Image 1 (cartoon, one colour):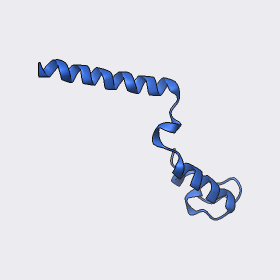
Image 2: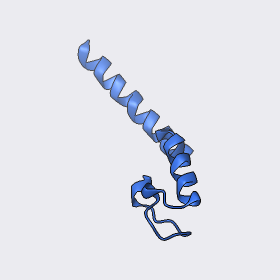
Image 3: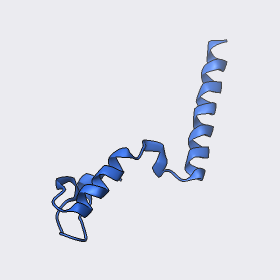
Length: 63
């Protein structure tokens, strides 16, 4: 989830504006979080399986 759609429970403003210390702290935390950090292990395994299948299909078509 991106922080541009989140509303702060402390000041009721968008987190992306960073009006209060809570907003600023959450904005920093979300910016430091990587893309794959928000995925659960099952989603990561499914993504890996799709990538392996695509690679196998590509290798099969080139031979």
